[in-house]
Length: 153
Image (tube, rainbow, N blue to C red):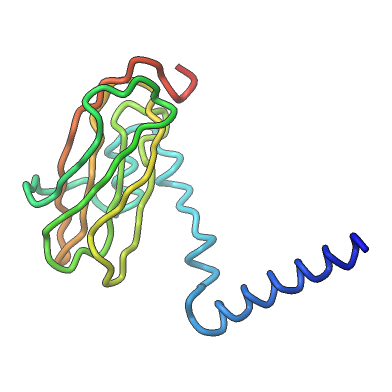
């Protein structure tokens, strides 16, 4: 009986994935994409260069970072990024003093410029949000003080 349940569960999961892929909702190369150069970078400039192709950004007050001023536990720091820039194509989040500064890059493809997630921070540093809009990169920073490090600290 248990084998039948596993078989049915796996068949339904495979069918759902196949349906999503065939309808264009799921593109395997995008889902499984891994930018090794960007995630292996040990400093913000290298991570930006690997992820965005440049380390040059323009500061913008149209990017809003909502994060605590003091994070009691760096293992779980809630961060929300939003922007009023027009036609934002991606939002990239970096943590300046992490061993791996690149936290995530979200490709939006016409979606609202809003991302909310939880990140790990090893120690007190700036959270950097970079939005791609109109072929340019705009950034904002917010310092988050960490009392207990989340990256082995």
